[in-house]
Image (cartoon, rainbow over all chains, first blue to last red; front, side):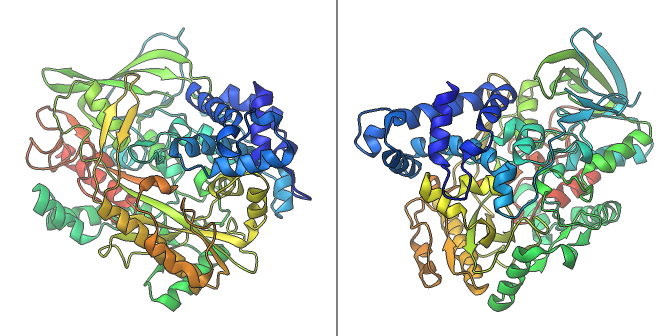
Length: 137
Length: 502
């Protein structure tokens, strides 16, 4: 399933010239982290967005095949048209996919460097226990 | 032990007792708790989320959504549009992730409450303002320092001078703001004075107990008197259920769980009042980007630093600056594929300013089977006209500040407008689902009023028909404010707490 999500997200944020795409942003590691961290509703939403993205080229560019079988040019047109779909439900499905792909893309050090920003430090993912000591889990 | 965090299922059922049990540690809960503690009462604060110090705060927006926000920030309104509701689930509540904006309650609000709900008036105004004086001293309220403005806020000041919007540099609960632009993930620099850094520790120093990772399931009653709360610990990372807890209240239970969770908790606890969950209100808002010739680098400087309330009464709007991190801008700009990447190349040159509508539309909070809140809310046509007007006012600011293009972010409109095309926003669609908006300020769901048939709590925050149960958060506020609500919530909560003592 990861490869399908990866394919959809990569089409939304492709590599362009010197600007890294989401495929350059440790996407595989990110997807595993997202699945581990998120609740069922969020992961289900990402899967639903991926399904919509994969199965809808017939509606956007009149091609009766899944998105991963499209040519690069067709895929790019599909990604653009789907994100601007007239259907609010479709737009929202893609928006969720875009949101989580965008979080992966925008926080990556190479992307931030491109925009002259310092890399983010690692998230500590800690909280305080009874004795107010840091707990990592 | 004064702080108890997550306890595993294998731990024994935890029992505790205090004079007052306060559910929630955000603006309302922490302000009420510290008032009670300063009067010598023993207080137990029960917070659903974990306690994180600034060094525990995440750096990334992903981490912010995961570690600080309620349900990853994915709670949305159900209606014509799915607009997210911004609420935190962490010690300090939403004060940890907001921009710490401090605005005194306008006097007309108290008169409106008196006129429409039979509570409030000039006496309440005096009391709330007196407490707001205290909060401003306690939380070191300051104007955003000039060195922390950043270019986005400075451009807004420039536009304001040209247009006469009568704006101002914001006053905020910060101590020597560094302008790191990380308000929304929690201020890792520790400058923002969220309540987990001041009032909650003070309650502990005064002998209070604090329970974190402890969502309350229901309020317990004996003969129509609230006598405590029950719940079960929940691990903040794994979601695993932990030990049960029961915290008994000798004098009262104080609810401050937000405009969405307080009504749900009241319903779950058997409060039959038909007004519970009704009269939900908000300040929905959205942003308009301006694209400039020179880099703006909007994430440099205070996340929010400038505001105007000139349009608060007519048409009912507040204008503000708000910087978004790159990873949020990535999904906020429309399109996908190479066209989107081309738009994102302008990131350093764009900045976003926002409007928030003083909306008259009302919604309703329901309890889902799993106990989570469901919010039904849609803006009516009159509010959408205000909403559209706000888009134009913000776009005009960008033009005045010298933007070469305006990016309205409205579905059905061009991606960008030239400065001489912003008049097209006057004809922008009025369907809410054409906009990407957010509900940042929430009110109601357990509103106060004199008439028990039209309200949930009385003018002192006491729930009608039961003893020893109060609501001190935004859920009790019966109208919109048209300004940022944290100061009003805190002033009101302190006043209600004082009334409990008397």
